Length: 309
Image 1 (cartoon, rainbow, N blue to C red):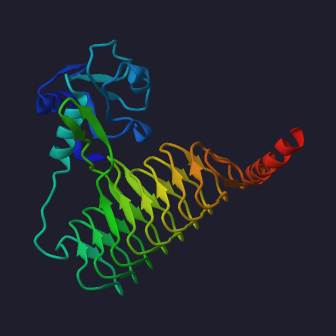
Image 2 (image 1 turned 60 degrees about the horizontal axis):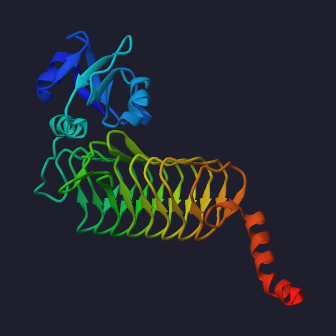
Image 3 (image 1 turned 90 degrees about the vertical axis):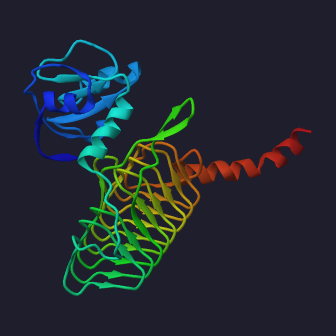
């Protein structure tokens, strides 16, 4: 997430009421999660296990809960609670805007696009040409939709990321300030849910088709010309490359990659990254031919036991 203008390290420290290490005029241009950071971004870290990863990332400003040696060319923001302060920044730079109309006046809707009754189009939404938005679809703020997109009834684009920190009194939510981006010629079935990124984009690539009741987690990137069948649950920060086919009731863990042209058979649990161009099945996931051989061998166990007797 980029800020509307570049701020100084001093300005950000004043906003958070925290100490800093580095030049007070050090430029700060945005904030992001560690997997999408770049120069000028703030990244937060609140556990020693991840200090080195954050300090050595592409981010040039690290919001951290301990005074450590500052890497050359970077700056530190010292906070007693980086999670809280990352939320403070999101609320400041991307505050929630309430709506009192079904279609926001700030939404941009392309020529030939049809929006059926009872749908909600939020603030600063962009919808391209010749789209069809069926009834009872909710499109949250800042969502971007390309041309020739079809979205069926009851689908929700832009709900918050499922991202929480456990506290003694319960769970604190990491506030989502990212977007959903739907490229051209995408088809989205009924009752799908696509969560926005925490600070970046959740993306569905050109020509991809989602069946009914598919869930896509925050910051996931789905490539072009993918097919994803009903009741599939895709976790956050997953990369699905081009022309992947995922059949029904598949579930994935977060932070994995599914290679181009892979086929994931129904009810598979994708517990790790897998190469493209192959077929997979089972939980834990394996190449489908190998998994089916194993299942065939298991069926022979009673016969083998009888022979042993």
